[in-house]
Image 1 (spheres, rainbow, N blue to C red):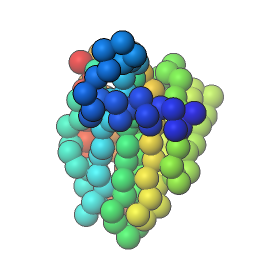
Image 2: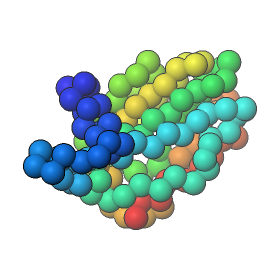
Image 3: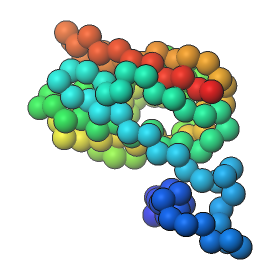
Length: 134
Ligand SMILES: [Cu+2]
């Protein structure tokens, strides 16, 4: 499953095959957010409604960080991979804690346009950023 989606994603960087290329609907958009020096980079992330998306968080620091989304994943099914520790409650995905030098990859389709803040809730961290779904 992971291999299949990876191949589909990489197809965006190669010339399309006229007859067998996936439609835009199936092409994966990969977006990287770095966690470095107790900041998210970038602090504004643009995603596209209806677009299959792989949202990747990479922790470059020597300490834990968390990705805590607000509203973005309500009622949205997703798949998380990587070496983070995801947490769920009755409303769904709550947060993922990512170790030093670790990463989390969230595969999903943003469904509703809007502005969705996210943060890291590790004690003492003041890391905030925003996802905009267009
Ligand atoms: Cu943090």
